[in-house]
Image (cartoon, rainbow, N blue to C red; front, side):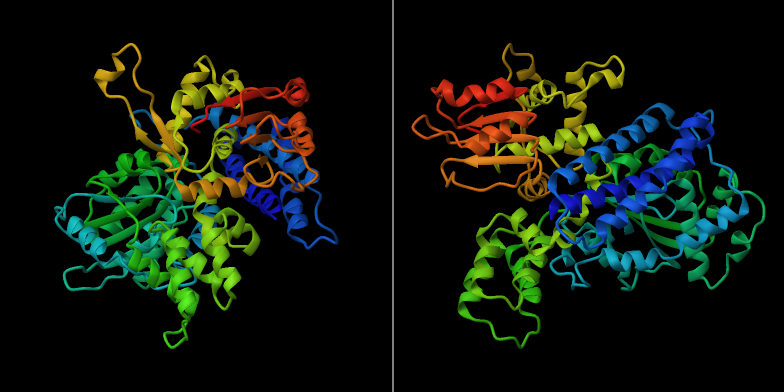
Length: 568
């Protein structure tokens, strides 16, 4: 069930953030708050997670899940406030302030840094799938890095939508052993939510020591407390004596506050020949990190998608393939839009299945297939990692996009006004900046994460006009499926162009959306009931002359109504 999976994932994300906040802000927290967090909250999170993961004797009621998620979001709001007010402490001149840990903590970090290659093996591909269709891109990236001066720091970001195969492409370059592509050290670092400069240094030192069979054990065995300068000296000792290819996999927008410090430290470090590859879904992170132009990854060709799909759907090369499987399979591949993660996930879904399942894979909504066949790990893992690292307010604004039909042209300014009307943007929490400006910032954040795409924007000349054309946004089709999946328990949609005689779960919804309603039809009782309790009732493609008797019960209870234009 999507609601239960969402609650568990929120818990996991909160536990990571809670641990990070406690480490980072403990010296500045009021003692009563620190005690409340330590004694009350910290032990509760893992217990609640275990409770949700245990198979219950009966399905967890939707309203209970809603209550749990609401409480978790309130806790996340508190963590957001801690982040917002604490800020990032720096030395004069812009250098970072390194926390002084004792030697036991340093060794503990070292122990946790060792499984980087295990994490790397887990992250690439789906179940160890062969990487297909990226040889041209691999050679281009190698040429780009090889052309750089060996004495210069080279950082090449690979940017693209989650699920496009950024990690897989980095893997191809990382594992390539062709002549002329030689490095003394190849280090893969997966960047998690709690990653910082100190973890980066520990990963480099521990992996280099392991690969060089204890050559740098004297660094790990130091008994003095690590500090910024000592860490810098340790890294310099490694990089100056060895040529290195280092992959930073999965840098997110939320990590950005320490990225300039990382780039500064690397730029100040003497090195023999160091090449960095950074994978990220954030254009902003790429701009902060790059020293050579970033590479924007596109989708696979339809032929390559078919090859990926076939590997999962048919298994061995000797498998018997029926003509109907080829015909339906080609249609399934078309809906993959060049996304390898989709081709592999849908291939797994139809493996050893009947024609009905194949037809469903080609025709049904992807988000429904993901929930029905438990494909969230294969299809949406990259999206979930980014989503659960967002602030509560940004999450709410992002989830609201699920009320728009797939492929809608969304007016940016109108979207921000709707966010404000629904109180999704609460400017009172963010100082004196106007709410509309916060909306602009949220749009930029979603675009940076590849969760929104700008279709067109006004030129400088057009902006000077009295009525400049609006900036139009779109949600990528796969992002939309992820949206509908995570919002499945928050949105109730009734489309009168389809059958309105549907049954719905007895749980509260955040939004009630009515589509294609005409006055001849009787207003569905389920919709009236859900709209009364919803945050907003949204009418789309409905006749303007809706009977007062039908609409009044909704207008009486709903907080805000949006009468959507016909073309949405």
